[in-house]
Each structure stands twice: as structure tokens, then as C-alpha cells.
Picture 1 (spheres, rainbow, N blue to C red):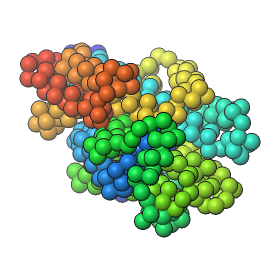
Picture 2: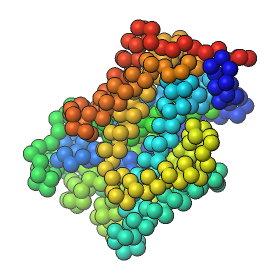
Picture 3: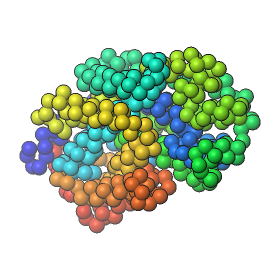
Length: 456
């Protein structure tokens, strides 16, 4: 290290123009694959909560409105600036993040944090894959646990050693959930006209012990909490997508199609399917990727189990990609630790989350994700604007403005989960707090100095 600039910064080389590709070859299909993952749209209609009626409490129109608002927030607030950072620098997130959090703090935030949370995603993936596959092996809890353990372990190994073999298959596997959504929509579309939100709320209130559905504002806030919480880490990872984009149009189009449109298509289909199933008298619940729901829609238990199997197969590449991102993060931030050890420990945590069922609490997981990366994306946006819509460069040590904004933003985002305060749309609130605090603290002179990189 010289002049306070670590070697990992000085050695970072921008991705050259000849290695970049248009949005429809990288950013859009990859993001679309994330939003088509059944873990996202499975609980879209319920919003991941026990609230009677879920996002359908005020009818289909309000649910779709909340979905569209959340999808646009994901693109414009959580992805676009990180994507532009990557485009203009050609550098990965763990380097670009040193402007917001400092060259020492940047190792932990967002680099190490991204790796840690990816193991959380691996646990979520393993949990829901085991739910989908367990009925094929008798449906016992022992079978579910065994599948979760094997699933996480194999995905981690592939992510650590052979992700290149998964990438080619992953290009086509996202078509499986899309086809399943289309089939189920065709099966339930006849019941959409008979859907009655009040009847759904009444049914849910009786079954769940609730007293009523959400207000219009409550539905929109729930959509934002659910969708933004799911997407937040992928938004910050826009830096790594942007460094593979050719120009600003590619960054914009990749997000508008791969994020906003894909979210609206997948989430909208799930909402319509759930409404159509209820309107058609199926009484199958709101979890549209559950084997029991798909069996009811298809009129065949075998068909439901087959669809669950296909959805699980399509979910394996995302599990490998989560492991791959986590492994790269740990290799960078823990260079002296054998990757098999660091990734092995992370995988053990993933397995623990899966077998205990904690990973199945999607709103809990989404709240943690949104609280963690909401303020990161907010602070990065302000950092970008204050620097003249470019990367300011690595900052010395621990950038206090970034860290204070993250700590407070994280606290705001976590408040609903720990029972401190019921903050609507908590991931968005965490973003706003992170952005505002970074602006105030930067203007107060609490940004650390920008370091000069020799030869730059």
C-alpha cells in the first residue's frame, strides 16, 4: 500500500469496451431470471404476510398499481445509479464502493456484506427447493431436511469451482417458470371476473384470526416492502452488470426490461392467478408456486408435483450464482483464508437457515435484505450526484458519512422486524434515510478525502 491506496484498488483494471455487450445479451436476461425465480412470485399475492387478502385486499387494480410502483422504484432508485457507476468506471462493486465507505470500510461494505447476504439467499433457495421436491420423496420432514442439505452443499461447490458450466444452462432455465405462469394463468383466467376482494378478506380473516384487509396505502406499502426487499442486493450488484454494458442506453434498457418489466410480468401473473383461482372457487390459498396450489389449478396432484420439480430445477442456477458471488466476495475480503473454509462456513449457515425453517420467513428475509442494502443504494446515489454524476474515486480509511448513513438507515429498515416501530415500506424508508443522511453529512464535511491513484 502506498499513499493510503490498497493494492486491490491500484491493481483493479476497468473492463475494456471490447468485452462489453448489449443489454439483451447480459443485463436483461440475467435480471429477468432473478425476477422469474419462483421464490419471488410464490408469495406475491399474499405479500409474504398473514394479512387477510394480502395485496389483493383492495382488489386486483390496486395490487397491480402497487406492483408497478415497486417495480419502477427497483429500477430507478436501486439499480440505475449502481449500473451507471459500473458503466463509467468498468470496475466492480467492491472497488466502486470505496468512494462511499472508504478503502478500509469498503472491504466490509458493500463487499463482505454482499457475500454474507448471498449465503442467506442460498438458504432461502435450499429451503423452498426442498419444499418443492420433498413430495416426490414421501413429503416427510426428514426428506425435506436431507434435500435442503444436499441442495445447498452441491450449489456451493459448483459456485466455488464450476460456475461456468451452469451459466450456459441458466440462460434457458428461466423459461420454465415463465411457461408455468402462462399455463396457470390460462387455467385461472376465467375466474378473474368473479374475484371478490371482500370475500377473500373475509375468508382470510376467519382462517388467520384477522379482522380486516389492508387499506389502499397499506397494499402499496406492502408491495414496496416485498418487492424492494427481495431486489435490494441485486440493485447494488448493478455495478457489476453496468461494467459489462456498452453505453447508458444499455444500462437503462437492461433495467427497464430485465427488472421493471420482468417484475411486472412475473408478479402480475401471480396476482392474477391467485385472484382467478379464488374467483373460480378453488380455495387453494395465495401461494401460487406451492405444489398444493398448482395441483388444484391443474386438477391433478401429479401435474402439481411435476411443476414443483421443474421450478426447483430452474432454481438451481440461481443457487449456484449466489454461491459464486459469495465466494468471490470472501476471496477478495478474506484473501488469506482458504475459500473452501470460508465458503464452507457460509454454506453451513445457509443449511442451518434452511433446515430450521427461518429461511421460509420471506418477509423476515426481505426485511433484512432491504434494511441492509436500502441505505447502501441511497448513499451511493447521493455520492454519485455530489461527485458530478461520476465516481469520485477511493476515499481514505472509513468514510464516516457513508457509515453513519448506513447504520441509521439499517436501523430504520429493521425497526418493523424487531418490533420497535411499524414503518411502512421499510426498505424504501431505509433508502431515503441513507440518501438524506449521506447528503447532510457530506455537506457537513464528514466525507474522507479522495485518494489519488498513481498512474491514473
